[in-house]
Image (cartoon, rainbow over the protein chains, first blue to last red):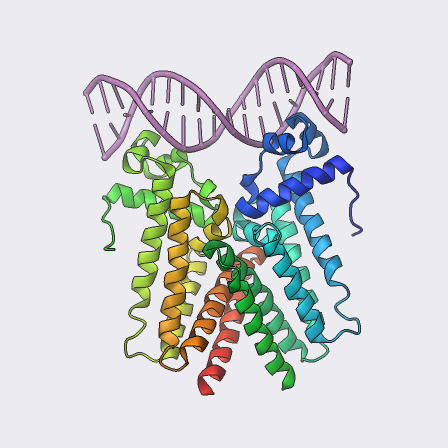
Length: 190
Length: 190
DNA sequence: GTCTATAATTTGATAGAC
DNA sequence: GTCTATCAAATTATAGAC
């Protein structure tokens, strides 16, 4: 699954689409708004992404590839704690970066309402993220414990972002990250 | 803030609106769809709820009142663990009941996109829930610890529901609840 | 790649009769 | 409370010229 290459204009469109989706979900984007934002007409957006589902799929896939690239190999030499810290930093950046929630959190919540193709990409994101976290913790925990912790961590981060955005209070995410770190350190200790 | 009383038909409308919003967010409802579902015309829906924001406000307020009524007084004689178990049961029911996420999770994720009145109701839901959980834990923890744990718990439950729905796997919520319970019991113990 | 033009549908909302 | 009728605007999408 090598990352797809897009033309500069297509990438511009994906940028704007991602920003809007992160604030209001899949229906928060319209071809006309996207077109105006990047300085073309709506028919041109359809040229790059014929159907809205194509656009949604591309936005989520690119997002997933970008996040996973930022996290690096979960099985390399770094300590589990160092990997976890990086995971937290990536999520914090996603929040402060435009004060919006993780793309797949908004879309995941409305998964049953999405075009099946888009929902599948969202599912893949969560599977990828929980697997990454499980592998990152594998050095210090049993496989069962690492799997349980990974599910808990990814879920808690998603939920904390919802609270942060809904309450307009970034400290909620910080609070959850602190609690998670304390929790994992205890588990790693024994 | 005594609960508002609605006519039977208005309640029917709120039922359908809530179910749809929980699957697809605020934009997942339309006056025409609601009207058809309850057997009237769209103009009649506007009679009960003039603007869409009025409808959204009412759905969230009723939801909050129902959930908080199910949880009971956080400061009564039950043990913190018993209260937590009830909280978990309420969330589990919300998930299995129509396989949809907590209403305020979907809406919270798109909070910055909602009419301000609706966003305020969502915020109030999360404040109410974290305060309830904090008070439920107050019997066994310091105020600071209880506050930290409450934020963590409510966030983790929201996020776990997103994972469950997005992955089509109810066990994610169960996993998180198990982990949270273990975590709280450790905190209560020392 | 981008444009004009347009089709077909849906949406939130209102006026006024019953 | 519900209806008919209607509106203005927005939406996804396509055909065909440049």
